[in-house]
Amino acid sequence: MAIIKVKDNNPAAAIRELLRTMLEKQLVSAILVPQEIPSKKTVVQTLVSDPDKLDAVNPLAPIFSINSARIVVKMCIDQMTGPVSGQAVSEQPAEEKEAEPPEAEDSASEQKQEQAPEQEQGKSGEQAPAEAQSAAEDEPAAAEGQSAPAPIAVVLRPCEIRALIELVKLQQASLDPFLVIGVDCWGTYSVQDYAAMVTQGPQDSSVTADFLKQVTAGNFPEELRGACRACQYPVPTYADLAIQLIGDDISQQIRIEAQSEKGKEIFNALGFEVTAESKERKSAVEKLKEAKKQLAEQDKADFLEMISSLCINCHNCRAVCPICYCKQCVFDGKVFEYPLEKYLNWSGKKGVLPVPPDKLLFHLTRMSHVATSCVACGQCEAACPSGIPLGRIFQRISTAAQEALGYEAGRSLDDDLPLTTFRENELSAVED
Figure 1: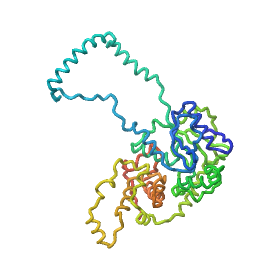
Figure 2: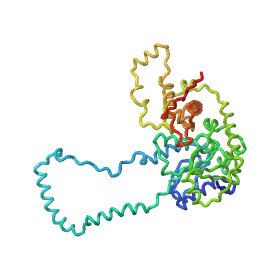
Figure 3: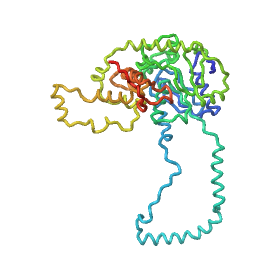
Figure 4: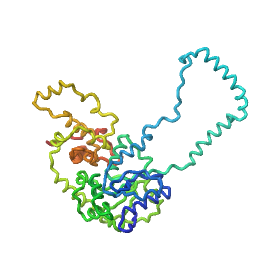
């Protein structure tokens, strides 16, 4: 644990300087981090390798446009599906080779005769077999002498880390090339609300600074995203380095903690002075969680009715969900393509048929697929054009499912996925 001093009441600048130092010392090869666009109306994830390109970086901006676990999955796709090295391509058996026409044989014979003198001249410059073998033996030795490439740092919110952990366990990603830097999170605004605040606010104001001033005082803005209002994971549960904000006066200082061996190596290389943990942090985190519970209790909408009446079957929620990783979905196939006669039969049974007919089935199927790994990041809710509070729906269902199975999504790589592990006493008692 170490303390990083904050200058000019700007904790985002302190984090920016930390990242800059990591790049300058070549402790990391690049950094995946949110960066403000010139208009400052939003932030986008950027992969930065030049320390001079970090000026617009703002990992504390209260906006959440994409769950970056999806980006990390795309970045390490070659780690999961790379070709098998050293595999020779088998040649076609001689007897299966197509016979060449006589003209082709004559041409090949002439070409060989022309190349013969050239090959004789080139023999003197060729490497002897013994020399070639010696060179081949030296190559692995040279490779062993090379140091491993510096990791890529990824700056993530707690829900992004939890989604990434689940994707690693689902064999969709690898943590090997990355240094995970987790940052405490009080919540975020929607993309639209954040842009509106930037546009409507004074030119010299900062949405990030105003937000931090409110939440550190214990006040939550009304515009807070629905999923963030119910979130019970404001601090990173699994990270190599954790940037701690909650429980400190972030106008003066923030803390950084190494939580893995990889993190400790970077921590030591940065030359931090080890300090004690914050005495106020634990109680501050619990107080924040309790406040979020009270906000969540205020939301008692009839979710299933909202899905049935408002869903347009656009599948946007599936497209942005970090846990929906299937390459082909059953709802994109012909299974749910019906002839006109079927529509008329269904309509005739009740006199009226809501269309599209599979809206609720789609959400129930998706819920059954992701419930045990859902991290309640709320990207599904943000992507819904009809404003259905999907994030809160999935948060309630997934929390209940995970509690019943004694599982917590994204907590640790050591926790087995519940549906891949059989326990004899699992679900022995079922309440009505």
